[in-house]
Length: 337
Ligand code: AHM
Ligand code: MG
Image (cartoon, rainbow, N blue to C red; front, side, top):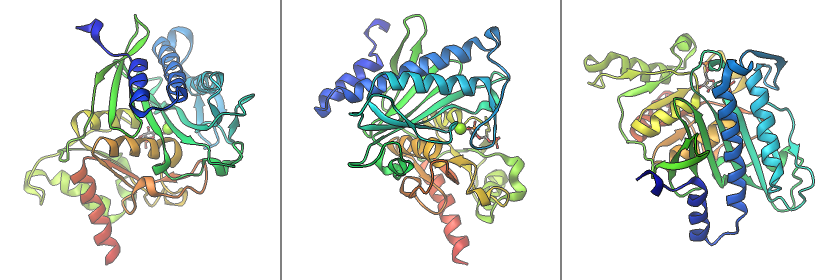
């Protein structure tokens, strides 16, 4: 019965009691979900209130910012500052760490990509927000980049909001993965996808195939074998999807399995890849591993990568365990030659 559903806030309170933790964590996740509800509202109103189009500025990555990139970033900064739980924040859209005013006792650090997949905003395709929470290391200066440069295994929570045909929030606190759907009339997220798990096998992969000429041999081998279908060495047909919104791709994989690849290739290798370690790769890797999947660079577990910079890029291969392990094995065989 719909009225017997569990809200995300109640779910967090149950977790808090189970872990015998203080209420700080519930409060800080609550601030994030309020920000996500506000971003969802702005994405949904779209062109009606002039939210589409470019902002006329570039972010730290040298990418053109959309109006909604800027708005979502402002919403995240504002809503997460109010609670006083964070010592500092870092955003994919901002060059430097943002110290949080007047919160000397904030013990957590928040990293976020306020609106991922922004090339999809104006064409009304799913976009999302991604977040990752770290502890402020003892004695660290929260205003320093160094405080944030912790490997993904140190995350205490991570999640994303998907602004799709419905708005969903998917969260891990290191105890599995749970998905919540926003009821717009009530204004709350309700638990609709408890204990999300990724099937170990799949017949679906996602990669931007327009970059095929730049791929490394192990990636080319994997995709060629998928495309060869029943006549190839895999002996089965594969389906291919590419939304160009990582949140939508990861969500599809959480619901029905699959493998997502954004490898380093000859063209993006100098930068380290395309996706950002701290704002995209690590939080998604935490979620995928907690759902029973695997997340790798192809040569290393993603969450073991020691970050060297806030805006560092990495190759990303994640999803169904047996497929990702196959891609990793292909890298190993290639490197051993
Ligand atoms: P963004 O953070 O600038 O939106 O870029 C990240 C996005 C991912 O969501 C998506 O997987 C990828 O970039 C799409 O890349 P491409 O433009 O090569 O299709
Ligand atoms: Mg992004």
